[in-house]
Length: 170
Image (cartoon, rainbow, N blue to C red; front, top):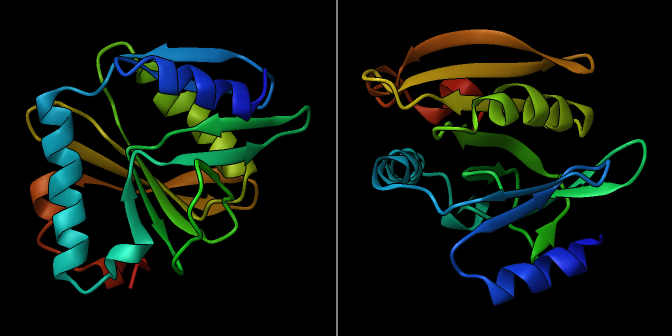
């Protein structure tokens, strides 16, 4: 299955998101729920209010994830780039500074293990995971060599009281 096949599947089905690992494993997930969407919106508003240009931030955009055996496609909940990107369905990870995944019921393993490993292998400098617990806990991972190391864990409200520059996102 190719990313073009995946794009065609998504065009025909507005009720699911389709992703594929670099090894060819297909994932089908329902659209995010309300709380999930609000968390993504709050993070995007925080970045915009701090002056990160809108052209460098996107929700639910496809990324090409290179792997040892092929190219996969993932759709992070939020992506921040170092510069504006050309239009496309599956964008390269070259200029990505941060990907954020908001954990939904049933996606814990994929978001905290599989995607973390894929994003690290792709060389994405930061990976944040937001839990939908009562504190909406954010775990900040930074690339250290070819793996992520946990830099901090904090409630979303605390993170939103910082500035993106403190997290190398200016």
